[in-house]
Amino acid sequence: MEFFLFLLFLAFFCLVTAVIVYYVKILFFSAKTNYRREELTDIRGDVFRICLDVFESGGNLVYGALAFFCSALLVWLWSLLGSLLGEKGPGPFEHIFHMPIFFLAVFFSFPFLKDAYRGEKYLALAKPVLSGLALGNLSAGAVHYGLDRDLYFLFYLLLLLLQIPVLVFLWNREPIFGVSFEEPENFAYEEDWGAPTSTGSSPENFADAEEDGPFTNESDEFGLGDDPFPDEFK
Image 1: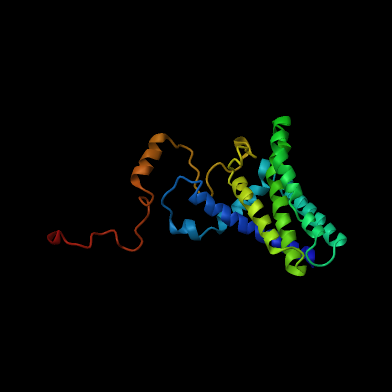
Image 2 (image 1 turned 90 degrees about the vertical axis):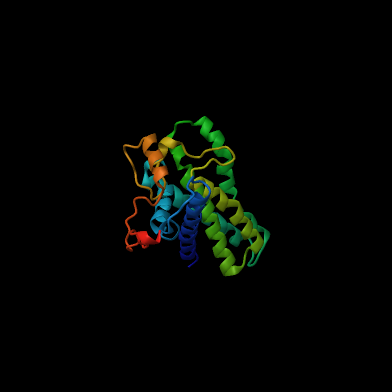
């Protein structure tokens, strides 16, 4: 039962984080100033694309998914030690074994690993590993807090505020404290989510598109294209 709830929370936090990542992307990390209504409301495809991008880090979906789920499972098993050693209810063992120890260890050691093993392909698994450790920690904490109240709410809130912002930067491929966890050549998706690919783009084309505006190519579906005022009223 607890493991089933853990998987549900893992899927839930993965989708919620993808939604946050999408809106932060278009509002803060994008140069756009005008948005269509569909870009703000119809985001299901983009959310699943963001989640898939996490698993496809390094270009291999199988390795990325295994790294994600194995790291999440490791955090889940680690959190069970607090329940075995401690008693029901909030206690020191519960809080110690729910601290994001593995997440912080991988996060702060990655710059040194990146310098020591530069060019190695398995460094691309840092993104799914960090994501699995963070979301697994949040999912395990949600299970223990919801079922037995083994954690204090402020402690669990601290876990959210510590790890979700890091994932927002990580999934948006933005540097964190000056450290980039992915190299541009490893990306499977170089264009923005939901944006059509273009093969013959040039600076002149972008200038024309900027002058025309974002709604130039839209078809007039409601018959509002004609001028409603006759010439004698002008």
